[in-house]
Image 1 (cartoon, helix red, strand yellow):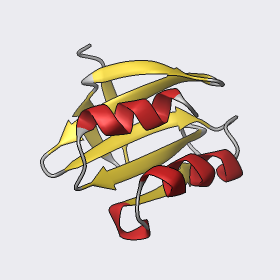
Image 2 (cartoon, rainbow, N blue to C red):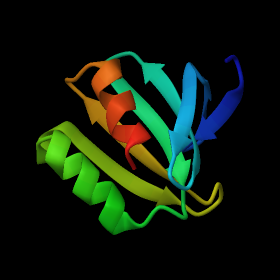
Image 3 (tube, rainbow, N blue to C red):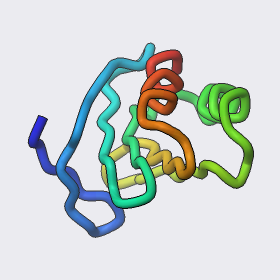
Image 4 (cartoon, rainbow, N blue to C red):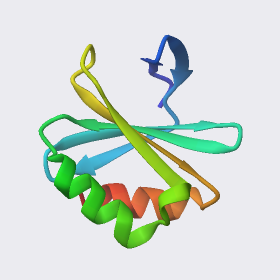
Length: 90
């Protein structure tokens, strides 16, 4: 991939991308966590529905980046493949 994105003021290199039902997701692998940007057009209900089915509350979190108009989802303690699978069904 190699594209750079800014998340909360920090610059990261995109490691992989994929598609949600509403558009492109971008994934960053950062030390002990995975950070994904997904389209704002996904509803908060859909994000929490998918993530709560796959993860425990303490394993993930999210917020809306109003500047990027995307949701930022952060996951810890699970594999990249599991997170990518969850992003693909959103």
